[in-house]
Length: 152
Image (cartoon, rainbow, N blue to C red; front, top):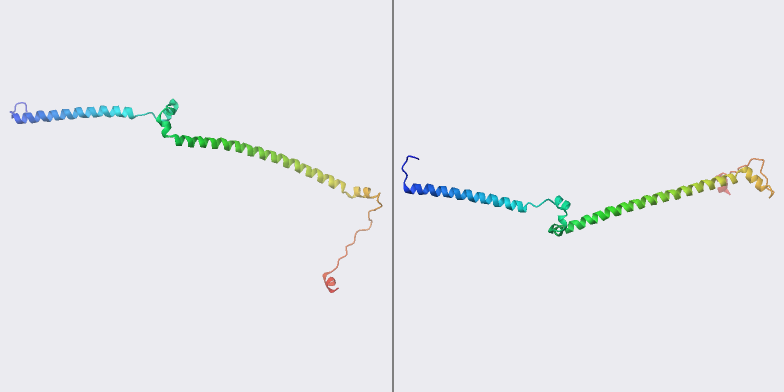
């Protein structure tokens, strides 16, 4: 191309093509820089960073997520309530177990006293004053057969 003869029309076409290419490059550069600026502006910090910074309390983040925040508060209240309820149930179980132990010990004590008071030797001593005596002869059992009872 250096030594070739170019027509004026061809030269104008080449210049126009170069200008178009340069304008396209400039547009691309502008779009890239504008895109970076937009990305920088739209590149908000994450929710975790906003929570750590405390920004979520002052921005529209709080308003947008108000339902979710109330739901989390409700769940936290349920967890705390469940803890207190579990503690109360365990205390009730311990108190009931203590009462059961006391009642069962009273039962065994009363049973032991009754067995001691109803021994044969103690009963014989207590009934001597009334004139009742212990039998020397063994007891006899009278059995009646069913056939005899029906015939009568």
